[in-house]
Image 1 (cartoon, rainbow, N blue to C red):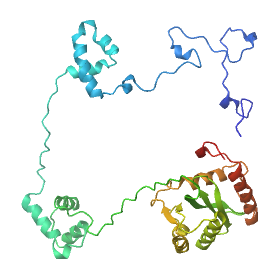
Image 2 (cartoon, rainbow, N blue to C red):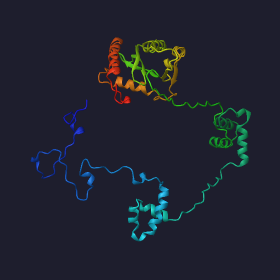
Image 3 (cartoon, helix red, strand yellow):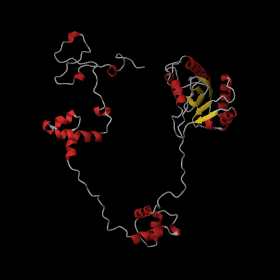
Image 4 (cartoon, rainbow, N blue to C red):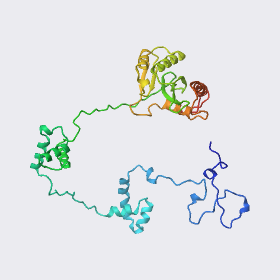
Length: 347
């Protein structure tokens, strides 16, 4: 727990001002600020003074930098007798920008790279392609073709040149069929009343020894942030999730085809056959996160963080009964006393 200036590291939390040489130490004032230096910034003389804005004054204008330069350059040119630097300072333009705009733009011809005298001629390139496209070399890499030709006492070009020649005709791409991943839409979830949208997930709780974990199943109502059901088991099982959903439906007394949507990630129990068949039988709509997107289920993740970052969370449980006892007390507090930032600090 962080402490004030009297903690273990007072230098991290409190800053004192060293007295000036020859100053009066009997005044008893620890936090007296040093007098401002002549010519110094007035913002440094007072602690509560307004800081300089981080954005430039040009950020409040609606024009672009190019439009503004085009508008102010004639003004600076017409008032050069007043001084270029003074005009630039008044118009918030760097003097270098003005002088750069006065220089004529020199058009340069594109540089054409000369052809190397060692480059292959068109006939030689055609010969290389004929060899690489030959039936005996059609399924070999250019390096293997190059080695085979050397064994036969023939040299056409280097391996890198073979790749360059193949690239000119599109022969270096992957020939096998490539899978095109579809574009998954981001799940847009909205709840205007309880029991319209549930979110559920599974998290791990540390057991008595290293490498031993307990699986905590939690079903959360998104609208009220109420935990409608939870289960704790020694391992993940799809059948346990099916029993949990049946129990939650009975406790909430939900009729069939109530219009409930359950959101989860793409874990094994979430997409498994037992849970999928149960939700279809109950008329519940399923919603899943996008593949390889870890933050599409923020409601359950936020609830798990509240659980594991609570001051009373032990970090490791001695047995399954100890974990159940703690979770029972925690979810009772979470549903009745915890103030949620997502609900305007209401319980």
